[in-house]
Length: 116
Length: 109
Image (cartoon, rainbow over all chains, first blue to last red; front, side):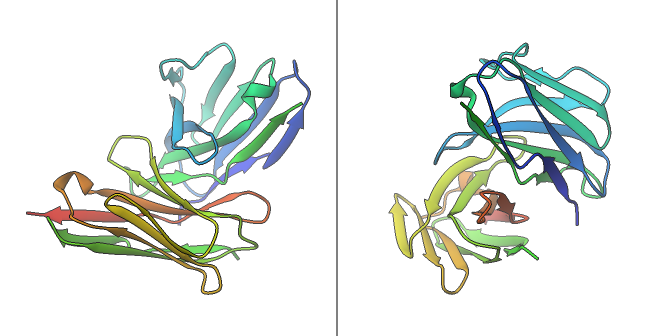
């Protein structure tokens, strides 16, 4: 089956620093990748959609200069949280669409970010 | 390995009741989510179970048995708008989300 991985799984950083999260599709080419943020016991909030080789499309209210997304290849997308603050602490989840079932969406295991 | 199983597709009739099962084998357990996802949209949170038993929320209920590694989502008084995919996800001991492949629910009039 289609597998999506994220790295790191957990990261703790100091306020003001930047953190990069990688999302990889391991056995298929992801034409589209999505980045979500989850708050406790709440729905996944879509942050942005990225297509390989083009700029990401951000959802309303998401600061594109703070959450930098790069989708450089068909198997890798990165989310960089710049100048992190404690309120950025959250669970960040990516998903990828592509592979044999072009309309299926495969979710990564998430990255837990804690900003101190 | 870690595994979540749920049926690929189910069909039910408008007004009826449907139960979507989810079984899991994970390294540790810190809770189970059910999400609803309509095509082209982000998943919507439905329920979170961490203790055994039934949690009821309107037309939707979710049940958990940790000893059996089993959960189900019960949808009552089905409406056409309930046609969607339903995703089961478990948080393991490392606080990683393990996702099921989702169950596509088709509602017929």
